[in-house]
Picture 1 (tube, rainbow, N blue to C red):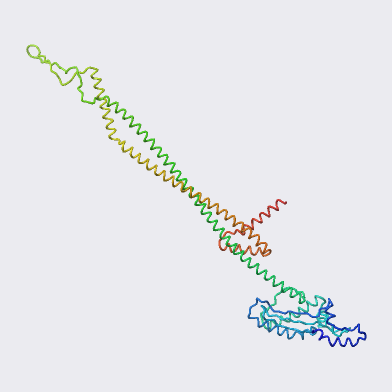
Picture 2: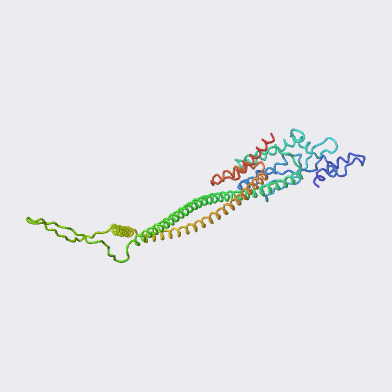
Length: 443
């Protein structure tokens, strides 16, 4: 071991001065290795910047690390270096320095192992952790000056104070750091998936909402059409009923007129008749003469003398003839057959229209039922999507924790840019409202 070799001379001189064998030190390395307060060696890891820096600075970083390595022993005479390696096969070049901290002693061995005394003898101020921090600051300032020589615009990030770590602690820290970085990467990937899924759910929900509104408008339009058809059916039924009533009235009227005609016909003889009379009318003419008696002459006229009974019978027959003539003229001018046929055809057309309207009515009712079924299905689908958004909201909030507010703003901006309804924000407001109600009830 290097420690044994380094202290061989000091150990030999020390043992030569001791006369009693029980006071001699056989193996100084084993002695300090078993001492919990003393570390037989230490390791320092030095790096400039981070692995994500521009690759063009890689050679400049390596050059600064080499110059730091060359000057390390001269700047730290009490830190005896026994191993120094520059690693260039990882994301960021870094330097490993293994050293044995030692100091000059006036008691016992002339040189002994110890970090605090070694640094104090190098004029580093402070005690304990402050002493280590001051030394680390000196080393950091020096490596920073070397970095600026190679990279003029180099600025050291203010990463806060660092505690001094043992090699084992550093390795544990590096492993933990790597694990955390992997977990962060995994959560970022998962978050991207959630973000993508959330956007798809939001867009799908809005598409379904638009479809639902469109279907609802269609249902309203179909109901309006249905009402119009129903009114047309009702109007057609009323017209059909009026035509039927008119037809019945006409039939009654024709029947009444037929009775009147039959009555008048009964009064008129079926064959030519000879009208009976009492006698021919005779007139007496008296012709005066100048001489003698007047000459009296009787002549028959073309007139006939009727008895009262004969006159009444004749009048009755003439009146019946007049009635028949008037009815004939009226019937000749009124085309009942044509009117009846027109009513019949109109009734048939209305019956056909009524049938077609009823068929259309049934078709519209089926369409309305189908649209209502589809709307119910869409409502159920939208409810499922809202539940998915609620679960995504809760899980995202649980995963992101303090970063959730930033993520929520990011989602909000994305959806605003796409003019999409923000169901994610609605769920956030719903949660706040629910929490407020619970607070009010507790008060």
